[in-house]
Image 1 (cartoon, rainbow, N blue to C red):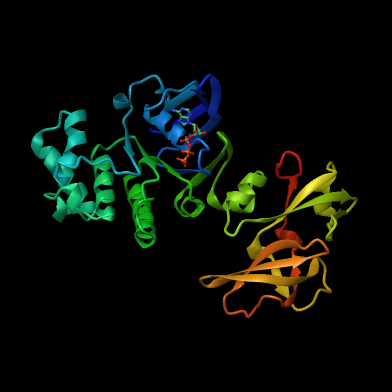
Image 2: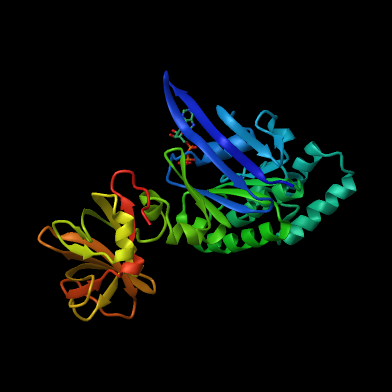
Length: 364
Ligand code: ATP
C-alpha cells in the first residue's frame, strides 16, 4: 500500500531573521494509485510541499507517512519516490539508455541484463526505443521529457512526484503529453503528486486537486466538486476561465442589494444568508445568459463593452448601472454580439455562489 499522508505539515524559512511560512499545516491523504494535482498561484508553496515529500527539504512541523510508515525523517534515497522536474535534469554526457539505467544502477542490485530489459521495455512504452543511443542534446523537448519520465518509471517507485513537468513544452505537445501522462499513470497505478500553476492542467489531469494559496490548503476535491462547489472565494476565482464574477452585496431580508442592482433570493437560498449582513455574490461567465429582454427575474439591461474571441466562444464584457459595474459572460462564437450593443443578461439563481464577505467561505 502506498497511500501518502501529509499530516499538518508546515515549512518555515528564515529570511534575514523574519519567518516565512511557506506551507501552513497542510493535511491531505492521497490514496494508493491516486493522481493528485497540487495547484495554486506562484509562491503559494507547491514546490516546497513536493520537496518535503521528496526529502529535498526538511519538514518544520507535522508528519509525512507512506502507508503507516513515517518518512519525513528518512533520507531521500530511502523514500521509494521518483521525481520528475520541469528542467528534466538529464545528464548531458550520457545516452538516453545511460540516463535511464543510472537511477536503477544506483538504487538496486538488479543484474545488468535485467536492467537492460526494464529500460528497453519502458522506452518501448514511451515510444523512445529508437532514441536509446542518443544524448539529450540530440533530442527535442518532448523527447527529453519522455526520457525524464522513463528514468522515473524504471525505478518502479511507490510514489511519483512531478514538478511542472510539461511547462517547457509548446501548447500542442503539452496537451498531448497530458493525456499520455494520465494514461501512463493509470496503467502503472503509482500514487502521483503533480504540481502545476495551471488550473486547466489541474482540472483535466487530477483525480483530485488540492488548491493551495499563501501556504494554506484551500480545498481538496475532485475537479468537478471544486468547480461546482468551491469551498471559498479564492477557489471559486482560481478555478474556471474567465474567472467567476463577484459582486459585493448587502443582505436586506430576502434581497441582496448594492448601488448597481438588487437580487431577490428564493426562500431556500435566503436561508444560506440568514446569518450574514454582507455577502459576495458569484456567478461564472458561462452561467450568465444573454436573453431577449430584461423583463424576467434576475435579468438586467447591460451594455456590451468589449467582445473577446476565445476560439469557439466569445467572452462578452458587459457593464451596467450608474457606476459602470462590469462583468463577463461567455457565449457561443456564432452568436453576434458587438461593442456598444444593449443586451439583457440573466443571472440564474441556480447558478449563483454565495460567500461570506469577510471570511470568503462558501455559504451554501
Ligand atoms: P512557483 O509556482 O513560483 O514555483 P511555488 O508555489 O512552488 O511557486 P514555493 O517555491 O514553494 O512556491 O515557495 C513558497 C514560499 O516560500 C515563497 O514565498 C518563497 O519565496 C518561499 N521560499 C521558498 N524557498 C525559500 C528559501 N529557501 N528561503 C526563504 N524563502 C523561501
